[in-house]
Length: 215
Ligand code: BG6
Ligand code: MG
Image 1 (spheres, rainbow, N blue to C red):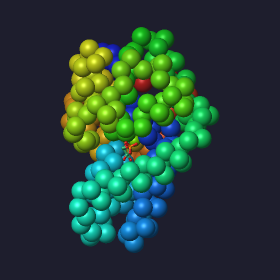
Image 2: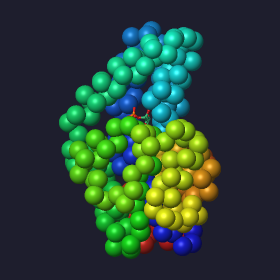
Image 3: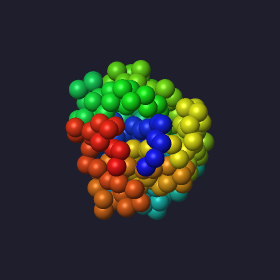
């Protein structure tokens, strides 16, 4: 890794453990539809858009629905999800994240968000994290879901850096693939068994500083 000028963070499952609330809300919807939906199935939903997530669940249940019904179901899931995250506070920021963000500031490394979520601004505000970001690219700004690299390329463009000058932190298979497709160095947060394509996989940000990343 040479000449890193920027770090792009995924949100859900990287900065905060909202992935579990996405799972709970989808599980509730799947139950209403009589679809068996496991934690393993849920890995396929991580990082992908709301509508694509619903399509995957319907595929698992072998159910076809018209687009109006799908929009209503996705809205219903989102209402439950927003309710689950209504009590988020800065205490929910994952361990080591603030220390790492501060170390990036000290080293003058630019910071962007690259998330598929349309709830990103709401979550960053609840966590008091918004001001750390030089650019925020979220589900309201992209048209192609991860593993398409659009979200990360837009992040690099907004920060005025090259893809090769960026590190991406991701917890989702689709997100790691998107970062690799963007030509960026990708650090997976989670398990090596799942994030096979990442350049490096870490369990989390505990005690991490930018200095320690200069491998
Ligand atoms: C991603 C999550 O960050 O955002 C996905 O990993 C989620 O699970 C996607 O489906 C879209 O989120 P939202 O908040 O717009 O429904
Ligand atoms: Mg994620």
